[in-house]
Image 1 (tube, rainbow, N blue to C red):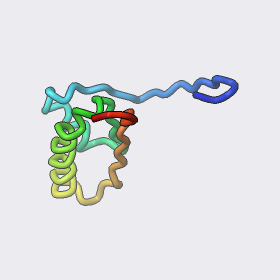
Image 2 (cartoon, rainbow, N blue to C red):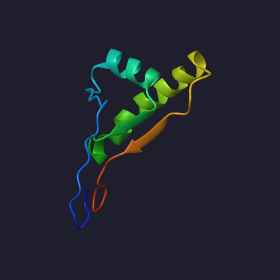
Image 3 (spheres, rainbow, N blue to C red):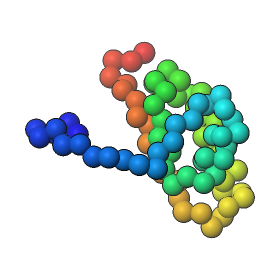
Length: 80
């Protein structure tokens, strides 16, 4: 962590998926509780469309699922 003590935490049950692997992206979003992105701010438009389509599919096919939380891990300071 970015604190005075530089504490660290182990996080498990995390998966990384390439956006071009559409089958894995679709399956992961269908089953996920949390989706994060770290694609660079210039690529957010590209990934946002894919995520939006999968959210719509998720809502249609799995109405009983918990909400999906999405976190964009992008540094947008000074971006163009």
